[in-house]
Image (cartoon, rainbow, N blue to C red; front, side, top):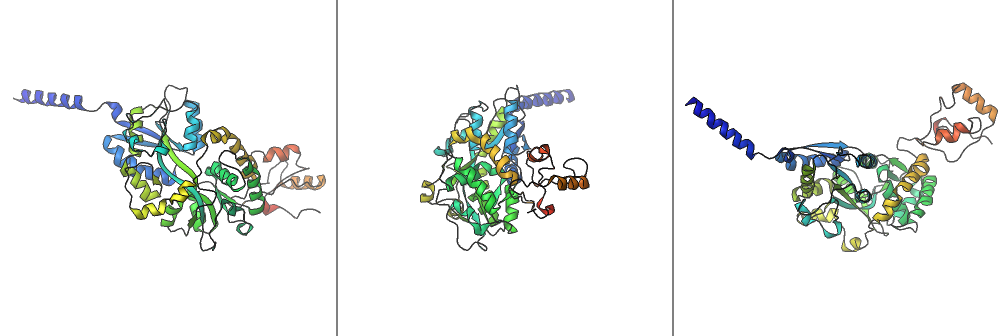
Length: 413
């Protein structure tokens, strides 16, 4: 009898093992994403409630979008990459699609794509959430609501305008629209941003979360930002209102795609499907105030009134020219880092002084000798510009040096 029971148990165990899903259906999925609020909400709305029951462990590879794009490009020739899902903006997913990075998608591989809003559909990515860029402002400090992106250049807001570093491409688009450009012509933005730097001393913050802190502390009174972020921050106690600019709000979609060499491709497709699940879409709308990208996510009218736009505002949306932005992203990033951000006012209070100040050779030698015998020692560069040292010390410190505003003596006559 004992032997018979043992055989029955063995047979039952073998049957259960045969019926279990294949290893690829469980296991893990590596998701390349931004950190902060977005990563936390992915975990609470998708990773744990939707992927957990499937036996799929989600590992987040947190980094800014530019390093993530660089990794995708570097790994595209490898047999297996390190990411299964990559979260990027709609502009970045488009530029990566031109390089043949993405696995083609369809309703058969991602069933919830059938509910994606027609204007947001592509063959290589899924749109997770979307919003549009408005002007957020402090109503206690700015009594008359702004009406245009051009209000960022108003001298009365000197030192109180904020910009987020990771949104550089959209900040450039804002400057272009405010100064005669378009979503297909960003060239007017360059001089406009240099003028903004010179006249209004904007403060640059590294992330959206840092900007929220600056708004709450009233370091910044006005910033171009996604409406969804403004609603989200207002719920968190930040005194902020929003204005839709007359130029038209710039649209933004946070998307996700699967690299062709993803090591866990089946799990990656399951993750994309979960991102479009109505439960996840409603969760992000309630928590982060981004509008759903699918037609089967039901939101109450009050919430839609907060995070949505009127029909007239929707008609005036400025949709990115993906081809133009993909072609010019590198050029615009160089301008942002080397010309604009290099000497713009920073959120830590440091300031860059425009131009070069030339000093008598003897005085420069004495100053250099007092600090150190090594060129540049003891002098703190006012910003992180990569050309600071080469433009100054390689052209002889005795002829030209920049030092931080805190240590700058009176300018010689």
